[in-house]
Length: 413
Image 1: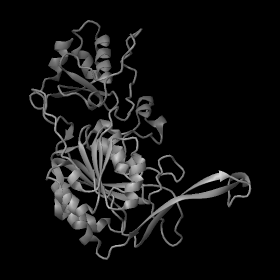
Image 2: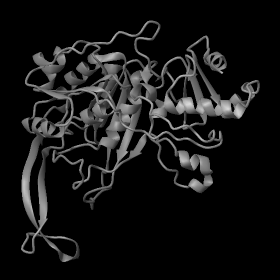
Image 3: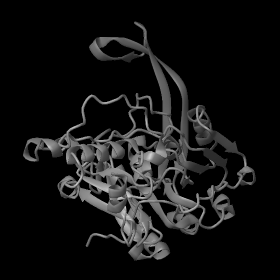
């Protein structure tokens, strides 16, 4: 069995072979009990344990099997759990969708307080695998958020469900002025630094809204090159007041640029699935698996009363940032957000085993992150001089120095 699987993994180009179940069964015809052999391959894909020197992982939730000499991301992310002896081999017809879970080893977070432009200039070129920024949107007004808590009190100042009264206690507030006379002049040198700091296969994500995103895209085309533009992602939400004199603006835009458009990280099998709108039309197997999102993402904002809420204005939801982290980086990669705000990108990265550097000059933002990262391996730096360079771990003999699953220049027309 080990020799057969090793043979299946051999390829003269990239040592990766993909097979569907229907393609594997004829190849296993010479093996005693081909169904049992397929079940063993499926078990190896689930556990991350190699068969011989070959790793197997399920692609698109079990419809195809990938044979490779490189451990799949799930095997690098966490050790396989101990298994009880099976009373029967699982049927090859049974779908085995993997359940995404955060890394058991969280990444490190470094928070630097200060103006991001001189901080960025101090970093070495090619220091980061993924950069995401959510700068001020230039709304022309102050962005503020007040944190409160409510307690039942018959003499309270707030009326709730069924007429119950509550007493409001103000816990604190955060605010910043979101107005720039020359927004692009402010943004341009920081975007140039982002391009310099990316590794050759790195990606950059810029999160804005309708006010400035079209100007920023022209600027990024000049800095990265138009060919480096990969996607315009629309994040839609449905919360808050409605306009009465126009269509209510309820979406943000996220621009994705790759430093090298022919070599970037896109982990397809790390994409979270979403339900089909008409599951009865696609069949039970597809309905159970779900479908991958498009470039239009529907995700609610951070709930004002949810556990995720920090009280910081413009906080972005972990669900949106986790998708970017998982698909566009690998465990152990180094990430950067130099408009950190409440630190959502840092938490998303650390939860999935990435090391993240966050930069913000707002004392309120730093205070929010100190509370948020109390349970993380987080270090706060008053200046960039105390941020030690990250030590690199040499690869084992015969192992690529940076194993990764990437899309190489696969672009839609």
